Length: 265
Image (tube, rainbow, N blue to C red; front, side):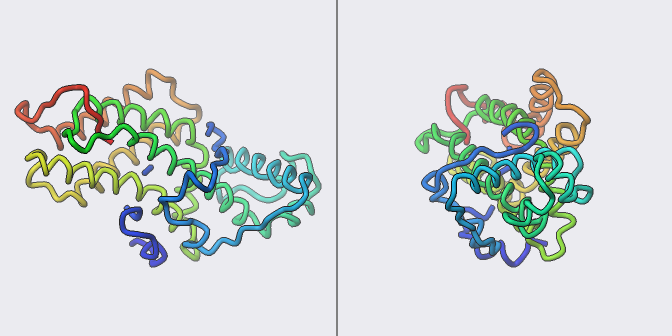
């Protein structure tokens, strides 16, 4: 069941899943996330502004170390002593910047949320509303999804674990918001296809959930859980297998095949 906090997000952004393997997100400017709901506001995270350069550097050091530990040990097994040990700082230093391990994970996921928002916009930047989507572009998107997931698999895996373990629902809210972008884009894709007489008879919202869940579960099991990151060829093969499901659902007959020059998302 979707948490009540998700309902506070705008409808267009409520309903995307894909950085390095350790999962530490790069920082994005506020302007890059203007079209997305403010994650801090939705889940009630207070942003603390650090005035000194030294303090900001220390916070960044702890965040990077936390990303490494969370990615290696998971949410439940990680403790603050692990984070400070990797950072090479005294245990007490942690509490100058974060109240508990949930606080540092929240900050990491805020960064991941912003990065995924940018990746979603980048994927759709070439969309042409005057042309129907093509199967070839859909294939490319599905392949790219698994490569993007692999580069962020550490925090994405931890985000899912924390969502399932969340007591107050906060990490569950973050997870729904992150994957919601991907689902919403797929729903709009299906609706766009239907405006061209394609993919008829499908419930756009539920089909988007089914296809998104297929991609999400394949990514989690085949990319997120293995001990090591699958190589590029394996990631492409996974993407192609996933694409077969999408293609057979959205392009069920040769009559609906289109040229291979148009964007899908």
